[in-house]
Length: 226
Ligand SMILES: NC(=O)c1ccc[n+]([C@@H]2O[C@H](COP(=O)([O-])OP(=O)(O)OC[C@H]3O[C@@H](n4cnc5c(N)ncnc54)[C@H](OP(=O)(O)O)[C@@H]3O)[C@@H](O)[C@H]2O)c1
Image (cartoon, rainbow, N blue to C red; front, side):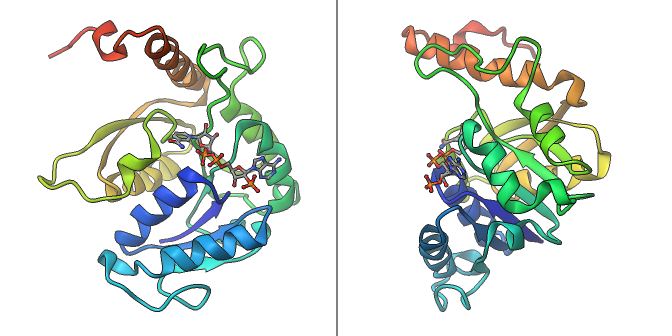
């Protein structure tokens, strides 16, 4: 696939690496062209299956472009920016002009108070629905928000999924494509439901963070269901 990545930080780098190792192309756009260039150059050295390849813009599978180019005509786009940068980045990408119409738009954001876990969105609001409003016609899929970025960079030794990635989205085709991208980095996709339920997924991040910072293993706070 040709995947657009909006953002040049930790998650952009990790998923970009995982997808390049799986043989996809990534088109990276950040508000800093320098950072996009640096990330594309670094990822471009990996090439398919992690082989060293020619670096950079003309390299193997990773291209630094403008945010608008990263978002245009892609099989899927990852919105890998801080929750409070979402509006700015979608504006840079031209979302309001319809650039993302029909495109699976992956929302991994966490609008969660660090160390506390409170959601910073308005009561009843969700980041995914906010993003859907800012990117009319995009097929928003919430995914990849719960696990640390580093999980997705190296193939599992035993071939078993590293984690289940719970997703919400309204468009079945977009959920299928994002599910493939989850599998390609070693996760197991699972659809919870449509965007009507996405706040439940976003609350889980707050639940995990709140307990973890209270010194409790969040895994011990949910029942094991066989
Ligand atoms: N890291 C993880 O383990 C992880 C796991 C799951 C989900 N997430 C979520 O993924 C998203 C990205 O996380 P991250 O760890 O990659 O963060 P990060 O390393 O801090 O990178 C944040 C990115 O957002 C960009 N950005 C911030 N404000 C912006 C604005 N106003 N306009 C345009 N771009 C802006 C930054 O650009 P500059 O570099 O130019 O500042 C940078 O590219 C967050 O919403 C986070 O909650 C992260």
